[in-house]
Length: 274
Image (tube, rainbow, N blue to C red; front, side, top):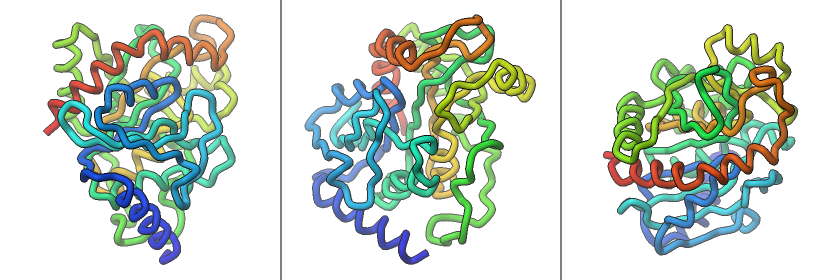
């Protein structure tokens, strides 16, 4: 228990020694969504390999850099690349950066991902505001002894995704001429894509999109008392929806195609977030 706190404090102290301004908002960028950092002004970049206790991302489309600076008139820290359970990390390592961001004084976090569409009204390239999640198959980010400095033993997840922030991204989308879908995000452990039978099951459970991240990080953020906005970029339709073969190249291509739309929406959300 004390060991994890000491590691968080060590990592936080290192990051603070490299960042000149106090950050207000944390941003976790999913597969192919890293180009948002090009909009950040007065950037300070830190390679994950140089940060004490940080894991190293191993997935294409995840650059592995912590980027600090100004976006939309706010001080932000963006994770250009995240960590996944399927990479072989323990879930405590996957969510470690969220603990560090909170320790650095960040109370607001935007968590993004590339996701497969389950809702048949969706199409590749859509942006979805996450209204809730299904994490029944996710390893618990809160497993083990509770550290009271982090939060309560049994945190309430009734409102994990901030309702006012969802309304804000919809308003921003309308201002920019971008339709923002709403939906429930389901976690799958990966790295294999889900089978058509699994997608049919998730659809019955109420899922609109599926991916291999986000849920552990959001649970950790909520446990820490952070305000969360979740955004999925629908990069493909899930298995069995269109009877097409799934591959990571398609995910990256779609993320590239919607890059401008995604970046504009997130930047304006940051600017208007209060």
